[in-house]
Amino acid sequence: MVFASQLFSSEEQERAFRGRVEGMLRDGEPDLALAEIDARLNDISASPFARLAMTVDPDSVKVTGWGSIGRNIESLDLHGQPISAVSIDFADPAAAGRVSDSDMKMRPVLETSYYCDDVYAFSTSDRATINSGYGRAGSRWQGGYEHLDREVNVTGLDALYGAYHSVLPHMERGELTELADYDAPRLCAMRAAVLLHRAIARAIAEEGLIRPMAILCGSNDDYPYFDAPVTSRAEYDEATDAQAESGDTDEALFTSLATLAPAAPVAQVRQVSSYQFTPETDHVSGRSLRHRFVRELQENANDETGEPVEEEAKATSLFGRLFRRSA
Image (cartoon, rainbow, N blue to C red; front, side, top):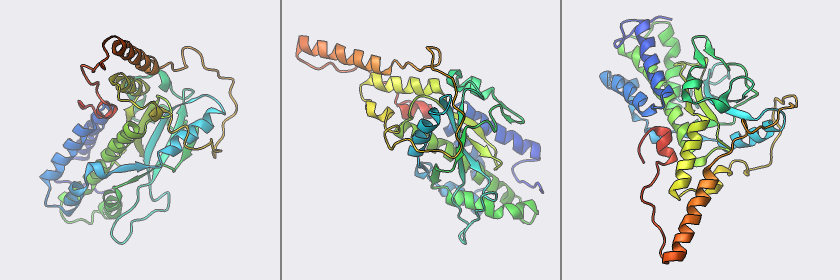
């Protein structure tokens, strides 16, 4: 592939930039990653691709099919160790036989992979430990999924995703005339990857998970090859505990995925395992206990004073925790 760039003096410098952006995602800072990319896009704002990238509102990017994750986890749990991590990844559209339409738009190809602790200790790993599982040759859990499907999709990225893949063959052959025209499509692809990461975080915050677990977002043989945790099990548990303590949590949120539909058969079924939950592996959340404790205190206070007890402070929301912002 021909390398040309107005922004980067070499392929090594471009890779270093991608590494810095990926590092922000791995640190749980997707907004900083987005700002880093947008700053470079502003440097080449005369490029049509750069203008296209900047027109995509981050909040317009949404994940669809989220309920399939809970249903598949329930089915997989019946056949072996519990699922402890899910990764939602961009996949190579060419391998899926997908091409851009006449407007250079293409619906992204996403693959959802399900993992258990046999391949990596996700259930006991914090963000730093998960990050230590990534290496130059890929993640330690690469290829170790229990199930793979394409039931989760994303809306709002068709223009960015399609534009990059439409111009990619011309970039590879060195047919573009302006140096910035090589940078802008790459930045389009990077921006799409960060926006998917953010959209997954929003889905976690708004729709919840069947239980606390690690959720990852990456690329499967598709540029820019970002791979990072969106949330760890501990982070999700901490965030939901905080919401429960604030008194504004609907407990149904955390079981909604499990009750959407009966467990459905999956394409790849594991051998039945002798694995049993133990006190070390079974997740005992303090969320309900704390919520009940706060409620009982309030009821007792109401009995004594006749007036409801107001909370002195509102805990950081789940959405804020996942995006590393204050509520």
